[in-house]
Amino acid sequence: MTSGTCPDRRQTRILMPASAKEACALARYHSAPYMAGASALQLGWNKTGRWPEHVVSLNAINTLHGCHRAADHWSLGALSRLSELTRNPDLCAELPVLETALLGVGAPGIRHIATLAGNIGFAGDLLPTLLVLDARLDWLDENGADQQTLLADWLTAPPAHALIARVRLPLPQPQQHLHMEKLASRSAFNPPLLNIASSWQWQPQPDLRLAAGGASLRPRRLRACEQALAATADQPLTARTLLPLLAADLPELAEQPLLQIAANLVRAQWHGSHA
Image 1 (cartoon, rainbow, N blue to C red):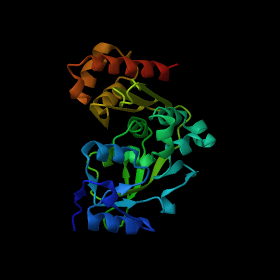
Image 2: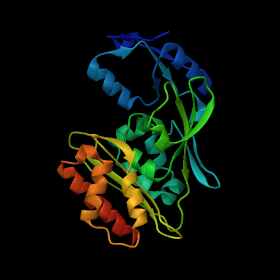
Image 3: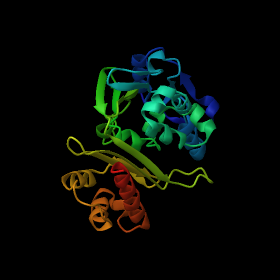
């Protein structure tokens, strides 16, 4: 069965599953989107003037809520509101870079309704930070079977009707330096022009993760930069070295001034990791 669209939101039927497996079954049967905070979904529907015939509400599924610290990671429920995460003092104390990223998403009213999984699903501002934190997703496939995937792999080809259940963030290491910075103008409530996040660990051996996103950029790991900088860890980082690597990782910016800005941000974070 395939769900169509309708011109009046009052015609949309909201389905209320009691479990994650039931939600997957309904989404597959009706070809319907999942909905929780719906902050991004409603913007899209209002813009087109078309609403789905069916949506699958996730708000009643308790297993998708909650945030706790395990022995070696933080486990964040997919339906955690962004403001809920910023109010968790232990999480913010252990992962201040995540708190910074969370507080940079929209206005307080948006953070009060937007969810963690929604930000992931709509390639939101958090993705570069989650990528360098090496986030892993617990999710259910369209048949309701439990799966686990690195976020970096998930983003290459998100499965149809898959339902994110939890986000796992490994605990930071003592010598790990985490950074995140955005170039953005919030006057018109637009996505950031550029978002650069990084994780640097030089001992006992180089372990680097860099990621970027932005209004015109699909969020991704900067693999060419990571490999080259790890191989030349004992050498100074210059724009001459960095610019061609960034051009390979971010070809959309190759002829734009934003590439130089990206290089400046990466160099500043590189220097910060040596401070």
